Image (cartoon, helix red, strand yellow):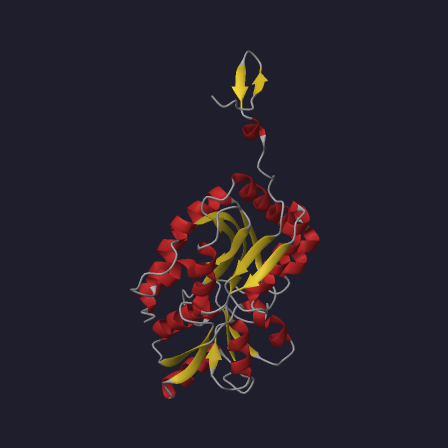
Length: 320
């Protein structure tokens, strides 16, 4: 019989030395932060702000990986295929919930099967924008769309928040407009400013400074109330009663990732949002700090699923 190397512990307990070897503590290498939107978009800016603070807290680099397109589906599917080792996280948005409701085909990920909720960091309304030469008010835009149906509007891709906001707006006001999908909010802004399309609903953070500087006209924010960043811009609901649509931005992990990774990433984000300087800097563009932890997030996700699925049904929006 071959002799096995063993260690004796206590009263004759034999344990192989290999058992005593501990797996490397998390994290022992950089963490990849998948952002399913293009550089310069509001989700990208939010992810980079969070990555900086997460990195400082865990003592490892947090590397942004932009995978934009298809309303977030490309990046979401890419992240869902990652190993559940705690070294890949996702900038999750409500598009995770709307994308399935918008299509009859099966997506390459399932929000409940493939991801684990860590924290909802920020919420963000969208903003109805037109060129500076466009209508001066939401009411004037509605009148123009009724007089000249079929005008083009830009979105950040099929199933994006900007797409759904526009479709809800069309349904609520009974106007007709043609959807022109792009890869993200910066593309919406550029094409509206250039007059290639007549309006769009990019995230507010993308257009705050452009509206303040007079380069783009903001007609209304999509939240129920006006936003602190642009208090003079009305809510769309002041013209279209009941209109209320707010996107959110969260950190999600890959299902099965170590609990320690979930705990430490959540703690890093909570600490960042509790820092007055960080909070002031990251909400100046119209973002709204949330700071919801894993358990609350899990409950919130279910309620948001119902809300956004119903919003898709009411809007009649579909992606073929």
